[in-house]
Amino acid sequence: MWDGLFGAANLLALIGWLVLILAPRWPITATLVMYGGAGLLCAAYAVLISSVIGGLLDPVRLPDAGSGGFMSIPEVRNLFMSDGGVTIGWIHYLAFDLFVGLWIAKDADAKGFSRIVQAPILLLTFVAGPFGLFVWLLVREKRARHADGAMRSQLRR
Image 1 (cartoon, rainbow, N blue to C red):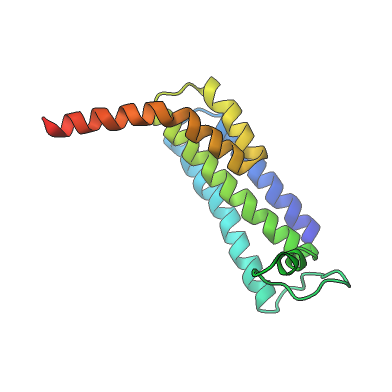
Image 2 (cartoon, rainbow, N blue to C red; image 1 turned 45 degrees about the vertical axis):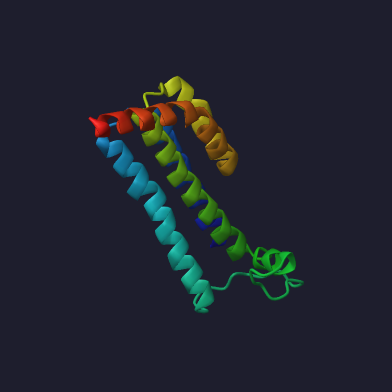
């Protein structure tokens, strides 16, 4: 079961990223990525985590896994010592990275960055989420500051 959910989540995220990077940026594109990609992944995450916590799904823990938690490295490691823990954790990453990718794409479009500039940053975000976001924040800084200054000038008039 967990293998199937893991594969389905990967496929859904991959489709979302392909649409985000390759498809024209029509309003329906953003809607599909937001709700059909990130939204469905978030919903799957919520259902799965609730089901495991509620005892409805067996996370298939490894025999040497201790109690899990969030207060220490061993506790977090133990959370991921099950097929369910890995799948749920991975879906968490997929959902947030796709959401961040959508934000980057919308922000880049609004600031007039070409798709040629956007594509490698989006690919980096797909592969290494926070690193891609960091690169985008560096790349966008000058235009963001310029746009902010232009907006302030408009407001003063």
